[in-house]
Amino acid sequence: MGSRVVVTRANRIKAKLQSALEATALEIDDVSYQHAGHAAVRASTAEGQTETHFNVKIVSPKFDGQSLLKRHRLVYDALADELHSGLHALSIVANTPQEAEAKAKTQNPIPNK
Amino acid sequence: MATNTINLSPIHSTSSLRLLSSRSSQNAPTLSFYSHPKPSLTFPSISLKSKNPTKPRSFTTITSAHKDLKETELIAVPPLPDEVNGKFPSDAGVYAVYDNKEELQFIGISRDIAASVTVHLKSVPELCSAVKVGVVDEPDRAALTQAWKSWMEEHIKASGKIPPGNETGNVTWVRQPPKKKPDLRLTPGRHVQLTVPLEELIDRLVKENKVVAFIKGSRSAPMCGFSQRVVGILEGEGVDYESVDVLDEEYNYGLRETLKKYSNWPTFPQIFVNGELVGGCDILTSMYEKGELAPLVKK
Image (cartoon, rainbow over all chains, first blue to last red; front, side, top):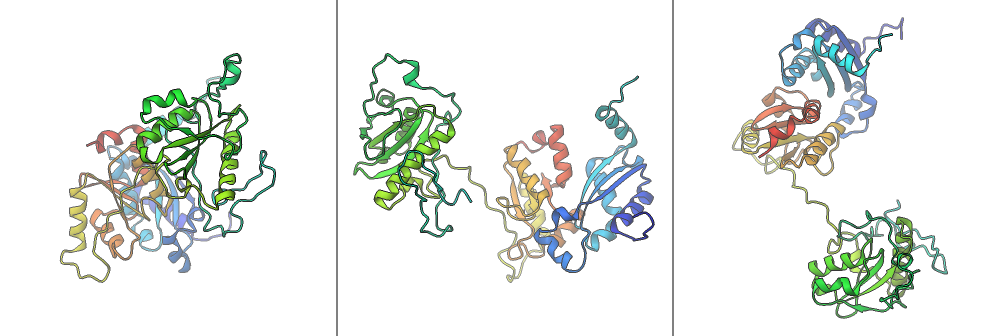
């Protein structure tokens, strides 16, 4: 992975979200293999598109004060080109930095030693 | 699959049979034997015999290790459901229901035979003329199933027929799953010229219905995991919703592209409440987990 320079869709997604949403944390998982069989995907696969489904975890200050619907729209807007070129579905977790911090605390309470 | 054939490894019967082995597996019916009353199979095991060892058995036709179907005597069903309890045991076991021509209608198992017979008598009195009962001692699920299989096997061997009530799709005797609404179709067919633009049909649909889910596949068989989860959440919440299959190329031709533009949302599923897009699977899931969904979708 390290030295190979392959522009995967995952990398493009990462770059686009980074610049458009000033993400402070960003995780992209290609989960296309989990959906490889389903009907709508077969057509894309036939066209050589195998990167169709991604999980996106993004933390951005731009989500502040926005509803979930608006946050998802911001992500979709940033990835409009990808969605027009074979990207089928995203599973999105969109948090503000404050929310991410609060979640990290409740999920991984670090004991004070 | 186990549901297609009755694969018997009989404990009680003398010969090892494989029922329906002469039929092809597609034709082999799925047999259902769990009867109506909810208490079935949730009661702790009760054995009347061991609990009251001195009490003379009032049900002379009942054997502890159930007899063959043929040897078991028919007990007439009293006309009134209230009288059933006195004539039939409230024990676990297998039972066979006969109509007034002594035709076997259904073989079932129950944790409380009297309760099951009562339910049948209330729902289909015309088919409940007499009942044969075989109480099963130490009635765990395996023992009950075994008892049921041995009676089914015996009856099929003797008559060549499956009791009508045990045939696939017969819902006279067993609890039926809740009926699912059909998926809505936006157009009369792909080759019918629309008099109203598809966009307007979508607009009307989502505004005239409280909750509409545009999903991939039908609501009874969603074809994508996200749509599946949406259906699961809506049904789990008991939401009265309409569904539209965006993959239906005959009756919803062109819907995917038009809906994406209408809602300005690039993926499916899409859930609308009161004419407004709520979001996709992630958002619905999140709302559900936060308890925000129920107040939004309630009537």
